[in-house]
Image (cartoon, rainbow, N blue to C red; front, side, top):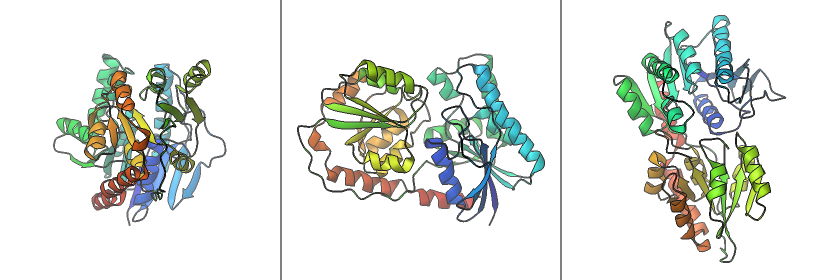
Length: 383
């Protein structure tokens, strides 16, 4: 068994796709390897360190070291930069005082955290694996979070440095890998999607009524990229009711919108654990997966997770994610950013469309095509 260290900016007890993805990676590898993790003190997405956590603990055989960080959700770019640098400083300190395994998996973004790890480890004889979940700074530019200029050019240089120092690069999507190959064509790459590994629930036969509204749910981060507030403002509610689970930057704005528009059938349920969320989602007819803008390289992990639950998907984000939903017949798609097209798709849905046969078909497709264990076998052969 090899010793493997995973370096990640996100890890449980934090919620969200990034945290789930890294824990699942660590848990999967730990069945055949000795896995340890270094991550910041838990703080995402609140920007405040959680209470009741252990800085050092072992969960399911995974040794976890939570390092000091100065967390922040400030919109001030200098405050955010200091927050990222604080974890980078903690990583360097950890490297100086601890024995580091020969095989390292570094997660990116954030670019600076990955840069720090790769910079200090590349001069030693380590096998460096870079796990890329989003294409920064390109994604930041498309989101409007970053503007063209000196800062953007510096981030591009950091991105290139990171790719050049990696022995193997994992990408969450084909688009990510295609972009990376234009920069480092000789570096080995591997498609490693965020497939879930939970036991799929049994879908019970149901009698679908024709008089009630279609229950559509959004569950996840309430951030700028998802655009849930704009979705609330633009949905046609004549045939649907809309339920929201999650937390994030837009949470207060969404709550205020709901309070100011009590006639709209929108319900905000707040944030719940992943296990509880899975039980809750089974109550709904369909889920909507939106992106405010089409982001090159982005494939929301919700596609794989919610299809495993048998939940039909209304996909509103474009790109590779749209192709996956269409090709595997997981639900319906609408042109990214086109709310008229989205409402047109919803207007054509009937309550009778959401019977148990459809949900079983979607779940079976997900089980067959989105197999976490198979891609883990491939990764194990590399490490």
